Length: 294
Image 1 (cartoon, rainbow, N blue to C red):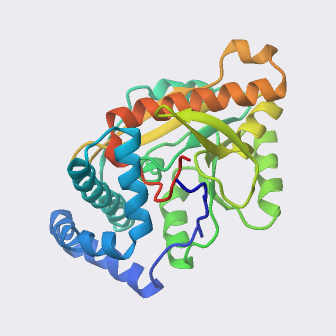
Image 2 (cartoon, rainbow, N blue to C red; image 1 turned 180 degrees about the horizontal axis):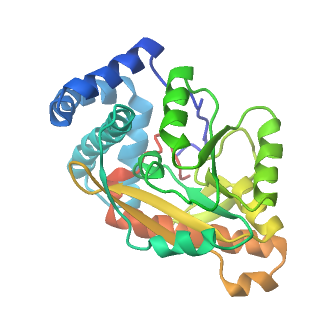
Image 3 (cartoon, one colour; image 1 turned 45 degrees about the vertical axis):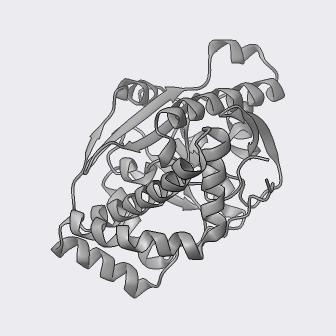
């Protein structure tokens, strides 16, 4: 498989399309929109052939699916991805979702400490939607976002998150790095995706689902350099309007005696182990539509 991990970071669609979607979610039941999307998914799979093949290979080689099961799994994966996007627009329109969080104490405990901490998100499930539910009254959360989003989408996200004490930081130019460092120096929380290379050739290797893959060095470098606590977060769709939020602490006391490189490798291995555990249980909610493994 190809080792390319290029992604534009661009939100598809025009501003009027996004506004139209929000309006539709205000007047139509969510199930009706899911139904129409189910009819569109085969055409998306046909015209986005590289993305389809990446998911097909993922199901065939990482989960051992047979050809027919992998093909059907591709359809289910694309459908679930569509529902994740729709649920975001439904949230923009004011719809409510039920989010179950088995271990909210991990987040609350770290929020009570003076130092800041990192939350490593991934392209599994729907982390943005659960971000609307996750909040800390004591600390501000800073969510690093990829550039390329439409202004209308960013404005709606900011409006949704401003009441949750969450600030969006677009990863554009070099200024965002100074903002990130200032936030951590002030004892705030930083949420960043740690499963996709974007804009930098530097990476770490980690074993995910039994095979070696490349993940971005940046988030792990920040955690190891500053010796910060790290949580991995995953938001999984479990029903029509139901989500489950998984949290796991990646750093351990043993890491404090390691050098920087050892600590980065240990964090990457712990993060990869958590990803593997979640993907083994919820294989169809993997939304990296490129050849992630060799």
